[in-house]
Image 1 (cartoon, rainbow, N blue to C red):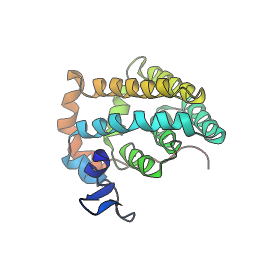
Image 2: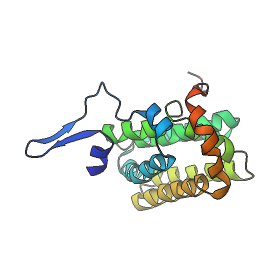
Image 3: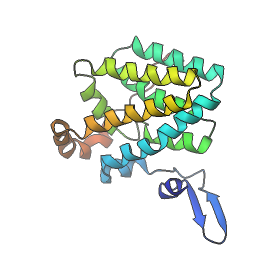
Length: 199
């Protein structure tokens, strides 16, 4: 509950109760977070929330939802770099939606939204150029989904945690840190990437 209060999803009024934030207001002011915030806050928030929503998804995901995730990964596997980038982030958002908790799903969706947080585009474009990085990302996504399909809640949670720990290690490696000083001020101006899957 403390995490949800810190990111503005709920308001705790001592002696009165807990109130959900106004739905008309974004839970996160994402554009300001990109321009003013530390990238560590984004990945830290994801590391706190996504293992939990993945565990919940392993318990609650419907067969139709799992089939949708399988289709998304198949489409991402066959795609060009732009599709892999967008599809990989969509996988995280749609997996969170399988948790059955609309509030947590909404927060995760905002945290991985490439249009609100172009940081992920910068990171993924760099990472996907590295030999083996794209294959590693795919393999980790498939391992997460396999654990969800098998309803193995502990393994699903662990696979997501390890996946995000790998991402954090990459982001804050010495070879990558120089990117942020020159790029973060211009990220809000990057062109929009739309979901490439056929409607």
